[in-house]
Image (cartoon, rainbow, N blue to C red; front, top):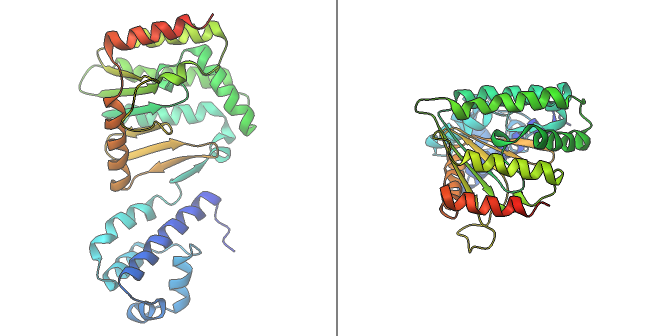
Length: 282
C-alpha cells in the first residue's frame, strides 16, 4: 500500500490511467510492453495502478513503445505536478488562512491575465472586509483550521491591489446573480458588499460581469474557477483546491469562461442589476 498523501496518490492514479489507455489504444498488453522496454512486468502494473511514479525517462520510453511519442509532453506535465494537482485543504490550512491568501497574492501578482468566475459567492478580489471575514470563518469551521480570521482578511484585502496596477495586466471577473442572494453574511454586510461591486464596475483595469439568473444561458454555471494566464486553472471544492495545468484543461476552461461571459451584463446594465439586488437586503 502506498504511503503517499491522498492527493499525490490520486494524481498518480490519473497518470497511470492515461498511460494504460495509451497502451490499450496501441493494442499492446502489459507483458509485451514490459518486454519492449526491458522492464519487469510488475513495474508496468504498478505504474498503471498508481502504486509507483514513473520517471520522465519512463514516460518517454512508454509513449515511444506505444507509437505515440508526441503524447509524452502532456503526461510529463502531470508527472511534474503530482504533488500540486490536488492540494488538500487540511494540509494547506495547517498554518491558517492567511498563509494561503499570501500564496494567492504571489500568484496573482505575477499573472498578466486573471479570469475568475464564482457561482455562489463574491470573488475574493472584490470582497469587503466584513464579507471576507464571514466567508473565511465558514471555511475555518468546516476544516477546523487555526482561528486567524483578522490576519487572513488583511491578506485577502492586500491581494486586491492587483486591481489597481497600471499597465497591460488584465483582470476579468464574473459572478452569478445568485451569489448576491446567498445569506453569506448579515443584510448590512451584503448591502455594503454589493455597493462595492457597483463601484468595481467602473474600474478601468477590471472587467466585471454579472450573469442574470432569469436568462436562458449558453452554459449552466456549475462551479467557480480561476484561470491564471494560459497556464493554470484552479478549482475549489470542499476537500481541496484542484490545480489543472494540462493544455487541454486550460483550453476547456477558457472556452467555459467565454461562454459564461457572453451571458453576463456589464457597465450600466450590471449596475442596475446590482442595485436591485442590494435593495432586496432589508
